[in-house]
Length: 450
Ligand code: NAP
Image: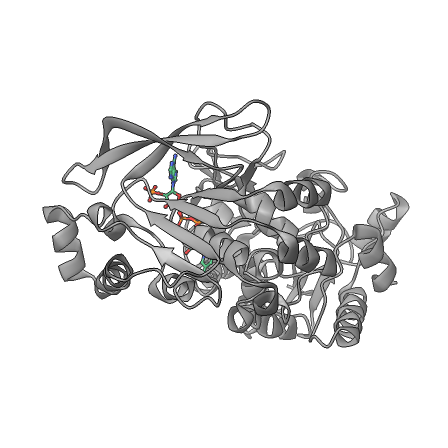
């Protein structure tokens, strides 16, 4: 080949960035890589998912940022594939495309009252407190100051994140990069009780021990566990014996079940074997009807019919993320993923030459950030293996896409634009004695990029 292989990566989150890294740290096949993102800033869930008080996890962004310095890698932000440019048009500029656009939406509970005012998706709450440009600021600034008790549905790490953010004092959040309006709203909220609901037992919860433990280390919140809900069946006992991480979770939970609350001003009620069956209220949610469940011996639960109600004027549904289809691409509606074979996109079981997939839109919303490194590398290995036979794009140079977008009024944010945003956020943070303050409004991000 007389020119480098031109590759577009759609989505600048961890899997997209790790794919760019895997492509440019191999020496056999020369490549040029454009990483496109709908947002004017890179790093996806590292910026808009990882909790702002988890500073060490958020520092992954420094590693991802260095990938943008690699010769041959360009960032093209503020470009929405499917809106600004469709997949077929993209093919005319690139020899291969790796789709890494993640799982941006929330899974639904599918119960009555789910859409009452005061019932929010954790994905939306996380977007708001991390300063995502599309966050519904007005809703959170209305709901939080008028809420007194919250139910968080789900016992994964996102549920733990949102619980911790609600339970932390203003002083505990002040050093983060949350936008100032988020810090102010969180500082003023009056939520004293947070009920976290796991529909299965403590051994089946998907949170990790480090994240779980943090709930017990908060300055102004007690964790309360009812010993009657810390139940294990034979299958749970076996799982604990096999898996040290589960045993550690259980030890933390048992310790909480035994200790007396210290009388702190907020209470986190960590519940198990409790599933929501209906949200009730006139206009706004006021109560959550729950049903007690029983372990079924194989890791699942059955309903017992025993119901009760929890008073709550805020419900955060934290039951997982969900991928969405991109027009022009095959999609598996049941799994909410793009079907693939070793990272090669499949349509009706046939490999689509030049189309690849990595990250959550490939395997579903599971795993930690590092999981995406291996996943992206596996997809890139398939792409490099296919390289000699890929149908090459006709367009003459990768920069042609820049002209095509400019002609249609798309104002692309390049790596230099992102660096300018980065500098502006650091400067804004310095004014408040913080490392950084996230700029949240799209016009402000675009202005900073210029
Ligand atoms: P998750 O771990 O899959 O947790 C989803 C939770 O929702 C589970 O407790 C699940 O219970 C529950 N759930 C699902 N449907 C339900 C229903 N209809 N009614 C009641 N409960 C329901 O997902 P996640 O918390 O969104 O996290 C996504 C991924 O990001 C995970 O891999 C997570 O570890 C990762 N993450 C990591 C960190 C970190 O490392 N600090 C932080 C945030 C996220 P069942 O298990 O019974 O289905």
